[in-house]
Image (cartoon, rainbow, N blue to C red; front, top):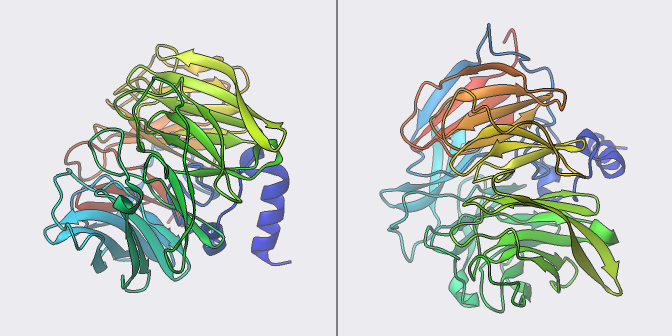
Length: 437
């Protein structure tokens, strides 16, 4: 058995950190090396790194800056790391583009425009993290373009415009999705009335199927939201789970048939956090006062149904746009609208185990990543905090302020190859996380 085959077998049986992985994608095949982070929120799209041997405390020794590069353009997109390169998207003078950076030096290797038809954007910056799949990458532009490029040199292989599916966003900040590659498909969310989600042949860009959804309810707004698709095998049916303008939906992977929807968690401004999938359960949350909920998926004849197990009002839990992670049976996140107050919830009950009141060293929302038994909180104000990922109590293990901070530090922190990557608009910082290196 190959090393990846062993990893796949163990992951499918036990799940990473003891919970269901929600299904592996082609990007995982490219991430055989634990040093790769080939897509949004990592190999499993769960915000959890597989790495170990990292600094256990930042109190006496803080991560050391290895290099700081520039030339990424304006944007809030996170980064993907694969094959010794770092990939992101940014708004450059020539237009919104994918940027490839050398992982050793931080120097830009190539840039390639996403949208040649509409190179100038009114959006403040890019938001889509490229998905790396072997010798190809996939990215969504703010104006509603999905593009496939060669990861070696940025050569455009195909491009589709969401106008083809009468795509629309729930509000006006531009498309933010990071596309999902699964087998021979690449999945994205145009947000059209009869094409909320579409599956394309990843080699040609040709449509395989599209999903129309019914009216989910009065909360939220029509169209796509600012989240990204994850895979679930809940109730024994492979499906794609996505947070859209009217709430969370499940779509059957085999043919794109709509399975279920949940409206109660939606807000009318921006639904952002990527849902968490774990076995037969889906946990979802949004900010702007909305709250959070746990759903249970069950078989209903030849389809899947979702039942609300509990709902948490916004004063108890709401994740604005920093994301959430699940480790074993506990959820860790930043709580509060425009706040990243550390909190730990028990998944099955929704009970607050600790936190939700003490802000920590930074201000604003917090983008989080889990690695080696710890949480890395990156606050809007730039500060980073290391917090132990334990349900026993809140334990702050140190903090630091990166070498550069320009405006809202919304880009998700990435841990790959023992290093921490921090995108800050045009700049990219690389910090060493292994002791004695």
